[in-house]
Length: 170
Image 1 (cartoon, helix red, strand yellow):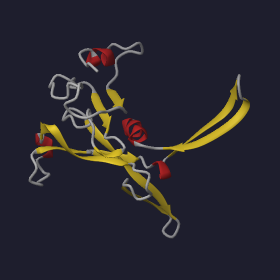
Image 2 (cartoon, rainbow, N blue to C red):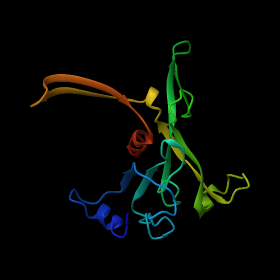
Image 3 (cartoon, rainbow, N blue to C red):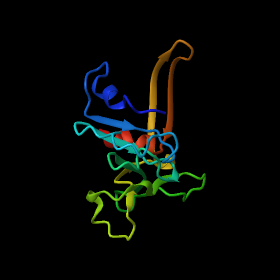
C-alpha cells in the first residue's frame, strides 16, 4: 500500500474537502505501510482517526503520532443501578478478539503523551475508546425492500474497532 496521494485524496474528493477521516484498516508497523514516513497523515487541517484493531495489539496507522488512535470498549447496562458501565474490551468472552492497545514500534513517545510516565519512550495507544465489543456492540437494522428479498427486516449486532472509530469521528 502506498500513501503518497492520501492527503490530496482527502482534500480533493468528489464531495469536497473533509476535516475528519475515520480509518478502519490497519497492519503491522514497518511492513509496506510506509509507517516511518513523517509526511503521512500530517495535514493539520484534517483530524485522522485510526482503529487500533481487534486482536489485542495496536496496528498502523493508529500507532502514528499523527493519528488519533481509537480502541474498543464493552458497554453493558446495569439494571440494578439503571446505568451504563463501560470497560476496556478484552477477551472476556473468548473468541480471541480484544481492543488493540500497546506501544508503537517505530514511533517515539510524542510530547502530548509526556504525562504518561510509564518508563517506555514509545507512542502509547489508544488515545480514546468507544463501544467495540461485538457481544455488546452496535445494532444494525435494515427495514425495507430489495429486488431479491422483497419486503424484509433484518437485524444484526456487530462491533470491533471498525465500529468504535467512526462512532468517535461523529
